[in-house]
Image 1 (cartoon, helix red, strand yellow):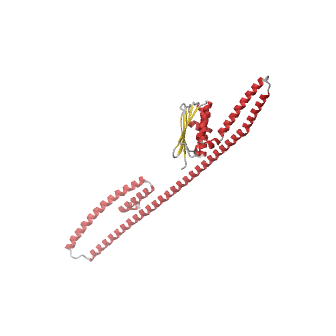
Image 2 (cartoon, helix red, strand yellow):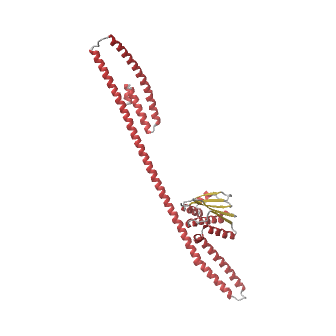
Image 3 (cartoon, one colour):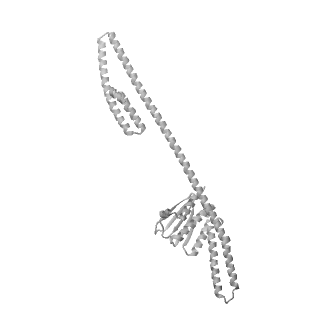
Length: 358
């Protein structure tokens, strides 16, 4: 259209072609081309306006001169009237043609806008559907992960209970029987066999220590104490036993825990504390281990702090330590979160937060 209009110097068609191209490029998002075509449209519009203005002045001049002639000439020849009728008809046709062009352009713009809006709405619907599908997929993956963690932790608890029962019922009973047997043998020995008796006494003492150790391991593995006596009493008992060993000074502080928490959550917090304590005893070289429990309106906050040598948490996670992995799994099980503040030579502070159901 633009090529033909330029060839015949049809300014209005040139303007219309640049306008259509500008709108089309704008709809396609090609703004540089849209701007260029809009500039050319304005240029030809100004040129057309100037030409039409000159044409209008000429027409007014001719009309004025014609009116003067009409006053001077009483009659016009039939040929003059025919010429005037032809000029009037041509002008009407030209105006009608222009109106048709304007209507066609307007219709084209309206159709383009309609399809652009329709395409935009379809795109928005597609994006919304994609977002909803991704949300559903994320929810399903999270649910599957939580279920897997729950199954893993439940399996660990069952295995702990089984091992605790085996240690207490079988190995503990066997060690106790051996101890009684040695004591009975000692009573029957003669006074002259003092060396054998002393050896028996030492062996009996070692068996007593073995029985005590088996009971301690069974006690640590079993969750019965937490379910029977509650988290606060179990934590205090754990601190008392650790303090008796002189390995590290453990202190437990608790706030707003007059009422018990759900047993499963109490057990999880107790296991996390045991895991933290084990890490302190094995690696931290700490002299003090402080545990704080605080219940708020919507959550339970556990803080574990030691004054040991600290560690590089990112490096420890990269190595995949079982202890840290167990802690993270238990935190995820209860929908909680935790943070770590530590560095080599700095000690360590672990802060856990577990949400409470309304």
